[in-house]
Image: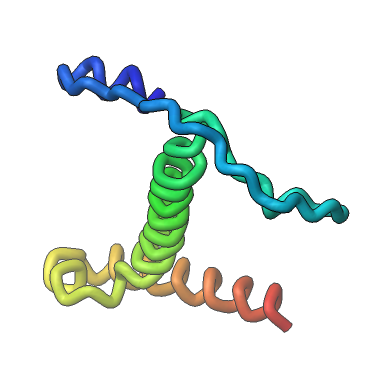
Length: 107
């Protein structure tokens, strides 16, 4: 995927192959001491995947923020000024029910 983006942007992406350095290998349950020999795979795991994870976390956090702000939208000054009394009353009743259900789920 990173190579496709680089070609779309007309960027050359030469991955040079470097001689494998010999190191003492420690054999245990996890292979954390293993080096990535393929430079494209090393780029993917060290740069591309962490950026994707960060973007996913930001997206999920802002989705939660959007849900919370949508629940409290009745308390915004703009909505207080624009809604009629009947609409404001029904929105306040919906807000009250939502808060009660949320408290019941928490407790």
